[in-house]
Length: 323
Image (cartoon, rainbow, N blue to C red; front, side, top):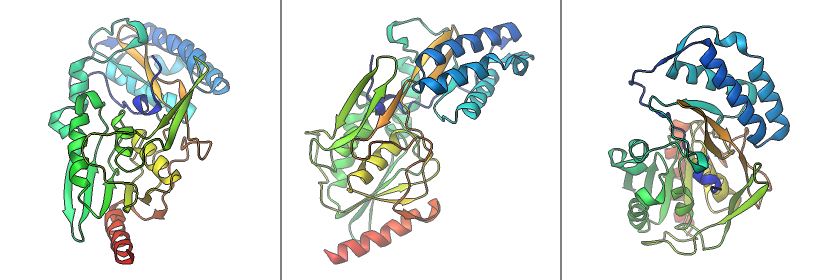
């Protein structure tokens, strides 16, 4: 299944709670996973030249895996190693205490796991909506869930936001997620505006994306001031929102340069208990012709993250006075 870039940039999850007891894997079992990971990375990682180098480094890393490790520790150490040799914050290894089923498309997440990361206990990522002085609306989003889980929650949040004269979207603690990131743009842009698509290496295909022509609830609209707050922790789908709105000159980005993760990824099963978090695509913005991989989204107004809200409020006040 080919996913939109925002669909899979952004499931930065572990497959099992950290408190679960993890089985212990000896040297032979760890090397089995490492070899399988090297094979799938070499054949599917988005940058073909880089893929060969990563796979080679993995196959030469036998001395790193001498000691027995529990599944969580092995996945954590393998992830750190993969990211150190690739510079890709999405590439990693995930562990599941339960056996990962072999399925078409290599789906590995159960409904319960999706609920854990995107469910009502975190209000599906909508942390706070607040009306600030001057009729400025603050919308604090911590994750972007799949629309099938929480499209109605985002529609409700944006219907409230539509009453504001200016909007501040706080993504400073948002590590990514799914297609509600694209849905969000539909409330701020006219339908059909160009958003980041992707190139997928395994299928050698390009996908394209535009802002939704229709969204449920009320639109904030394409003209009122919008400010997006960022930090070094802003990642993946959250970066895509900031990058696309910046490229379209629809929002002012305030805060810090973001984390720099623009390669959409899939989970690829390489062992009954392990899956590679494998970037198989690269995001491509049709306006800039590139993306934010490795560089992050650079703010229009650079301030420390903890000062970003105050600065955005100042800018919003000035913009509303001019109007």
